[in-house]
Length: 284
Picture 1 (cartoon, one colour):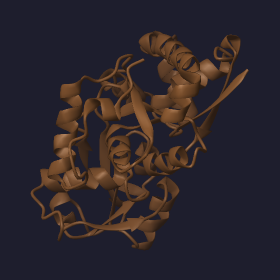
Picture 2 (tube, rainbow, N blue to C red):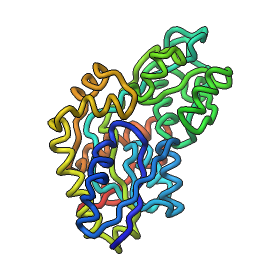
Picture 3 (cartoon, rainbow, N blue to C red):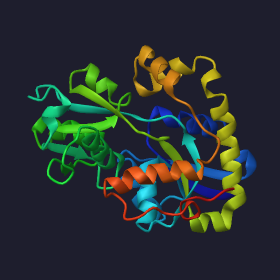
Picture 4 (tube, helix red, strand yellow):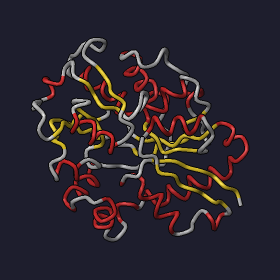
């Protein structure tokens, strides 16, 4: 049996992986797929891929594109979630800031440099016409728990994280959400280390066939909204809203889409160049 290590955030987007693992679907095909939660998000997963701690990851599109260009020896093999990610912009409950314009020049909490919370701070700044050199400051807080502490203690002023994941903290008064910044591209992709593709391509193909079968029918699983609400401590209405706006993918984005994403990142000086489609992707 081949062992493949995969990483992802412990969020509702990845429930399909949990379901297929629980059902033993990979083991029936001779694959010991071992899932690891990454509470620190994309930046932490990029490092784990580089360090060969994991073989593949369900990871934010912008974060892995930047890191591959920066030298991470991985390829994107498929888009996983085709819809955009809704990034909530949060401040502490007693913060003096009440709208996004007031955050200009203040300090953003980020999980780490190169993470989604870091890159999306640039997207938010550009959307609001800020000076990207003067108006952005950062404080590394590692994860969501670090953001709770950092914002509460005044170490940072605002924090961007997926809207529904942070909803319980908004509901209990830890955070106030003062805006939402959606990604202008499909939000999650699956990336695999190049050496793993060389050695275990058939296993990776099998893994993707299994997960794709589940994501095609995910919204039609009986009581899936209740399952998500219970597992991730979310309100049922919020889950239903999230399901209505989320679309999974079983394909790889085309060349035009990759160029458009990189155009955004290049304009923000987050990448040094536009990489070729074949440099970033692997078609299975």
